Image (tube, rainbow, N blue to C red):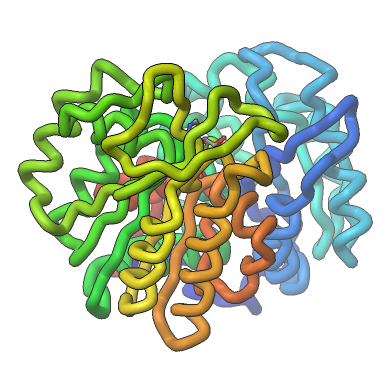
Length: 403
Ligand code: ADP
Ligand code: MG
């Protein structure tokens, strides 16, 4: 990575210095209770390093989509409580996003302590990347650490804007440990992949993943398509898909990708169909050419599972995004679980296996293979953008290594 990260910053110079950290603490909440604290945990190493070096850490994050106004349902206070349980240094919650009241409260912040400000999206200028808002945050310190990979694909005031404002006033903007690790795996491992390089793309919406498929296609040895995505490709082949989820608008693009990909693009040869998406629905394995009117394709079939597992088993680099079926229901989870095991087994044998996507991560968790994979990306949208070769504004705005 040609951007500076926190490892390039001398730790002994941090004592008593105010460092602004943008993390991705956007955790799922149910009536104020955090239901999954993975993102909080993923943010700890950067916070520990800075606090451990005696920095005064001002922490920023968004939570949910409160639409530019204060909404108590999206307060970061429960996140501060959880941080306090997980971290040694004290974490203070400041119920302001900035301004005079926040500055006043920050005066009491000691070296090695952390202050979490209120949800950045409580102010309208956050998502419009208002330079004045960004400058007000940059004014709080002289070093900015962006560790929010999950929002790196958006130019918001607390990400790209704050980095630009910090550099504009002569300070530095660097990547945190989590962001640096994401970039290392997703960017650098893909630049010169060890071959065979196999990508697996599934999930529901083909239109949101066309970019990834077309960017990966020329670079991989095989691109395996599963999930509802495959249905749109079936239609491009002229096959019937019954009542399956299909994006009619994308059939043309699917046809182009089939032409462009040739043998590299591998579609399922059979599928599991049912009449309804329900746990007790009768499921039938059928050839992909035998899907009947009224059928719904809900998983890849047994022959496809074998075919995909074989191709994954031969790979040295694997990128996986999107489940192979409606894995939330046991009856349609087999394809996804098999792929998860195949990727994990390849990783055990020395392959690099990278998983991106929120639902895919949930599927891998369910298949109990999380710790066998080389890297599980925390940012759904951001990892897709990066895999598709797009620039991430939150990263572009950071200080270059050479400068
Ligand atoms: P990720 O979050 O890993 O990027 P997506 O959000 O693209 O994955 O897709 C996940 C969703 O796709 C899951 O909820 C799953 O049930 C759904 N899905 C997968 N295959 C099918 C299918 N054949 N028909 C309907 N939905 C499907
Ligand atoms: Mg998803």
